[in-house]
Amino acid sequence: MILIIDGFNLIYKVSDLEDCMHRGDLEAAMQGLIALLRRANIALEAKYQWRIFFDGKRRRGDETRQIDEAGLQVYFSHDLSADFLIQQFVRQYSTPADLKVVSSDKKLQESLRKFKVRRQSSEEFAAWLQGVLEAGVPAAPEKPERAPDAAEVDYWRRMFSRRSQS
Image (cartoon, rainbow, N blue to C red):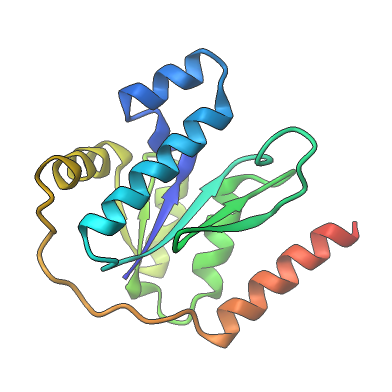
């Protein structure tokens, strides 16, 4: 299963990270979330594939659109919204039933309903994440993961190459 995380939406559900946001330290909040998800990935023995989407840029002046952080794929939307990129990812994915989108954004959740993807609120996911990190107990087994297919890789290459040509 691929977990698709609406990054800033989840950050506001984790108190330490929310404090970073209130102090205006976006980069620390993003890095903190990535670190938490990396720890969860290790605790869960890399059971899931992770796609984390953030609004805007990685940092001011940085043109990076995607990075791999220890097996987590992290996307930066630049002048688009993370919600838009999440919707595009889901639309282009060949088997949306293999996806779970984590966001409390009602508009995003509603727009994904027709694709029959699994959806979970950021609040519920944050509570689950805390349990995983505190207890180190993995969730019940789910469908085996699969590597991204060629169509998914091609889609993201086209998406980011178009934006950099603008």
